[in-house]
Image (cartoon, rainbow, N blue to C red; front, side, top):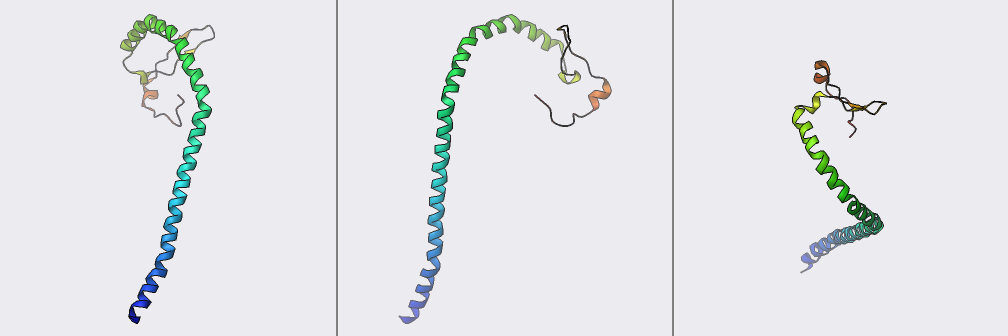
Length: 120
């Protein structure tokens, strides 16, 4: 019986810190989850008035957008059919008189890879 006391005592003392660490990690994880939940709830509450305003703006703009699509849709579809490769053109330029021009790239410019970030 004496020879069992030492291994049992050794195993129990070694397992105590492990179980304490596991309990601490679980509590920390649940606290992190609760903090994230509260953070996102706060963001949602702060954004709710802005989202309501955006919804109202979308409802106001809906008739105008429908008219725009009805009038400009065929013209835009025509333009898309005429231009085979959009990468063969520079971005549109607006001239001081209000004209909009699309310049075709030269063959050398078409072979060049775009460098840096592309602004969209």
